[in-house]
Length: 418
Ligand code: NAD
Image (cartoon, rainbow, N blue to C red; front, side):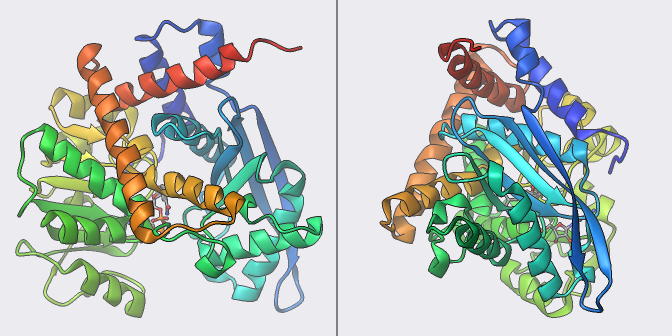
């Protein structure tokens, strides 16, 4: 893992690489490399023991040319201004790749949620929502879950916003529980797009999915669901999984659901019976067919990229490869399905949730999954088309070529004002 790569610089480098293949002016590209606005906050809440504690929090609205800003809220000690800027930019291009009518945003609070009670987290979430209330709304900016936030936090965001606005507006936030206006299929949507893009990548390379071996780094929402779906829908064999406490490996296979149950019970995948402990770096370089990075940014640097053996990488996490790792893998002909497509299922089903909230008409899980599959497979085909037609170095560049074209067109069609 590399800690000295700034994710915002990685994003800008990814845009520059793609811009070289596009007929878009440098002035427009420059505009597409910077967030439009960042709100930086100091939140104060009362702890359960009566002490006041302050937290740094952010909301970055990167670009709104194609629709309302859209993006998650992360609770993690590593949250900082540049990370939020990068994540908000990736949202712009992710929404454009799957062609849903959103811009991009991201927010976060710097804390380790494990150190706080549920009541404290609720006060913090409500305080954050109150502060960002003037700039969010179902036609303005629509938050969603990210690392260490989920339905519970999204329900609090909705309730706070609706109470303060004296209205019902469930589409102000997505990733809610079903009874609070959430969508069927939302919880597993990110893992589902990771599985679907892995399937398409194997098909493109003429590789069999049945019996193919898989390693998953990061066994949270995205990683554990991707693991379960590649196992159940593609007949792949998950052989190794990891989380922040360590990794476990069994070349004969690990039951993805059983190891998740073990993690829920014990707090970690380590100690799972019937699998040996390996280091987190070893997991990344195991001899597997598919690698799914599903933890955090910069997990795979140039050195690890030289050592890993997978034929396909499907990026469930945002920004798991450093730009240098990307170059090494392109040279080694490893097919990397970029994050902005591989994990776009989350925001795509968030879009379906928002559509259902606005129509007050709710879809079946079957319909959600079918519509998701159509958008993800169409987007994959468009990337392959751009990759082959322009002889691009990798699918990431193809994804940015497709996405930047769409955002730049929306901007230029709008004309300039004032
Ligand atoms: P999560 O908190 O549910 O899971 C993260 C997992 O990664 C945890 O199991 C944690 O222990 C593990 N982890 C952290 N550091 C690690 C390390 N160094 N090595 C191995 N494992 C490590 O979060 P999530 O929602 O699953 O998000 C994971 C990634 O997927 C993030 O990059 C996030 O931005 C991205 N993502 C998530 C969604 C979504 O809908 N949840 C959507 C799009 C993208």
